[in-house]
Length: 324
Image: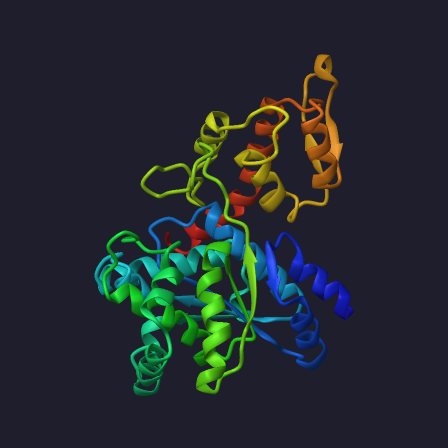
């Protein structure tokens, strides 16, 4: 694969890359660049997590070594439970990411507590604290904090650690949802002041929940990788899906970000009296038909549920084989 093809694969479905010029230079000068995503161990892995997993799969295909940080210390600082509970969840999360298609032989899984409690790392946290204002740290946490209105001091430490993870894991390309942008920009600005390289940052879009609102574990407005076939159909059938509307349509987003990257073509099955089956080789073709009213929301939902189950069928099977 030539450099431009690799760049296009890395860019696919990304919200932004800071910067694309740096990405091209990296691929031209480094045969084995390193990319990472950090995840707070979560009780369920859902389509939101899969946004960045899909990008890690693209990066592996583009020749990157991939690191997955299971951020147990971050989860503890963000009040996600005690360490024993968090680490049990981390084990499940690792299994889920492998089941979703990450090549275990080409993926380095790292538990945060394996390196974040070392003397050198803690000293770097203190150095970072000396050059970061409280306001900057707080703004960086706005999108990911559990206590946005009344944050704990621990949540001011969180973004400093996330920036330093990039340095200590020797990362060239940091990947995250667009909600991680402020933390990544803090890393780009302050890591060079501590003698580390500034990372390239890639941000993926944030999926809207099935109800059209922000995706939230407390609302249950998401599809988990452990949802069975019937549950997926039930949730998609009930999902918000306004006709002729692309923006803020969760069913359209699933088609764009999860289905088309994994299938060369999508067949929407319809009764003959409604025009019969229709085949799409690109998301753009399908979106055009939907906006023009040539594709009914119910037909779209049925296709999304069918193809999503094809993806999750393999994932569910692998999870069962691994004891989950």
